[in-house]
Image (cartoon, each protein chain N blue to C red):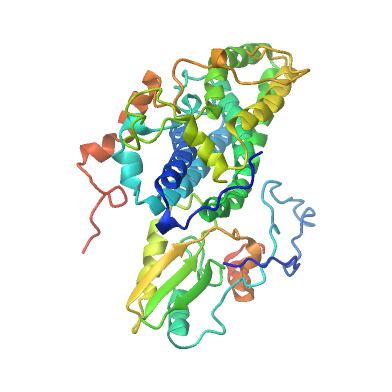
Length: 306
Length: 151
C-alpha cells in the first residue's frame, strides 16, 4: 500500500504532475468502459435468447453510463466529449486490448468470459478508488458499484452453465486461450497522454512508470497495478480451474501466488498506445456517422426545430 | 456536500412475499428498499425563501421523463443556492448513470432555474450520496402509487 498520499490540489490549481496523473487514470478507466460497451452492443439482436440479449444490452448501457462519469471528471482538465471520443486520435486511447478484441460470429462464450474477466478487475479497481484523494473520483464509486453488482453474477451464471456441456466448454477453453493474455493488460501501466511530455504516447511503448507511481503516490488510487493484478489472478485462476478450464499461466499459485509477467503479455497492450488491428476498425465504425454528417458537436446531431 | 448518513428506516414496508392472489413474487434483482435515507435528503426547498424558493417552485414543475412525478419529489435535487449576485447553482443527481435523458433533463433544469431575478443558473451533477428510493418524498410516493408502481 502507498504511504500517506500527498495532498491533492483543487481542480483549478493542479500542477503538471497532478494533471498528467489524473488524465492518465481517468482515460484508462473511461476508455475501458466505453470500448467494452461498444463491443457488447454488437450482440444486440444476436444473443442466444431474448433475455441474454436484453441483459447484455443493459450491461452495455451501464458501461456507457460509467464511461460518461469518468469522462466527466476530465471536464476538470478542460476536455469535452468530442475531444475525448469523436475527435480523439485513436492512438491516444488507453483501454486494455481485452475490450477491443472482435467477437467471432456466434461465439457466445466470448462475451460471457470477457465480461467475467473484466468485471472481476473492475470490482477490484473500484475498491481501490473508493478512498481516492480526488473527491470527484471517490464520489462516483458507490454509484458505479451499485450498478455493477449483477454483471459478474450474470457472467458466472452463464460460465457455469456453459462449462457443464462438453462442446461449450471447448469453446470456452479456446476463448480463454485467446483472451487471457489480453486480460492481463488490464494491469499494465499507461503511456502518457499524447503531447504530455517528451516520453509521450506519440511514440508507442513509451510507458512512463513514473506516471503510474504518481497515480498511487498522489492517492488517486490506493492500490498499485501489481497488487490489483495479483489479487485478480488469485480470484479468476482458481475459479476458472474449478470449471475444468486450463488457465494459460505459469506457476501453481500455492506459494507466492501468481503474478503478471512480461512473457505472458500480448504484443499489443492497449495501455501503452499500441493496439490490435481490430481497434482501428472499431474506431472507424463508431465515429462513422459523426464524420459522415460533418458534425463538430456530438450532443446535437440535429438542430432543434424552431 | 456533507453526507450525514443516518440509518433511518422510514420507507414503506415493501412486500417481498408472494402476492396472496396471484402468487407473483417481486424480481429478485430489484432491491425494493435499498439504501439509507440521508440526514439532509430528500431536499424539497421547504425552508427556502426569496429567489431560492422561486427556483424550487420552478423545479417542481419539471417531471421525470418516464413517470408523472416532479423531479423534486423524486428526490433528484440535492440543493439550490442563489448568491447575492443572483447566480443560482442547482445540485442534482440522476437515478441511473446511463440515463439517456441526461442532456434533456439537465438543460431543462438550467432553463427553469433561471427565474426572474436569477442572472445565471448552473447545474452541478452530483453522484454522492447515490440516489435511492428513500429519497422520494411522501407526495412523490403517492404519485408513483397512482401511476401503478409499488413503493
